[in-house]
Length: 250
Ligand code: SAH
Image (cartoon, rainbow, N blue to C red; front, side, top):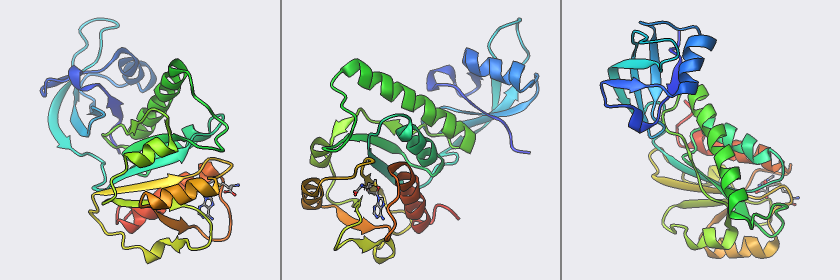
């Protein structure tokens, strides 16, 4: 049986003992009904997992202490560093993209504000709240899928600012169903490719000018065929296809 996975931030561990935060302690004892001696895995969100045993409970309501037996670096992590930059959409569509993308091994999500985005985040507090919510989604998905790194959620950024920061030497792909777009199998995606960035439009797509600017910034246009996928479908699909091509799904 798979061991249950919990989260504790890095400062809760000294390498010998890990203290679970209150919410995670509650989940372990009251929801999962674990007891002293139960074997568990605790991820630190930065790419390390601790396998250990729940220690004796000091007092009613005191946090769970896990005695570390084994430290596993890069637990559940792919070798590839995949960034998914996708148009920020209304409602919970981006949450879906973060949840599925996390399961597929994405390291960083960039919510993009584009010309046709229906979302405009002028207000820093609202942007921070949205990022905070997405971080929670990413952590829950990381625990559920048994990886140790909580993917980074960048602050929402304009497409042009994002393009300005792109590493031209990495593999940069824009998914766009237009003339001249390649099919994925024409690209030389190899295992251990250090950095891959995938760009997906919001529900109303990219404007022609945005596509032109993205191509000038060194992105390769890729088509997913004749059917147009919704943005919340396209994000996870491109992650799955690229991860498979990189040898991460087998
Ligand atoms: N009405 C929009 C569709 C947007 S679909 C338009 O005409 O552009 C949302 C995003 O998913 C697109 O911007 C693109 O990045 C991606 N996408 C969906 N279907 C695709 C396909 N067949 N090929 C490549 N990208 C696709």
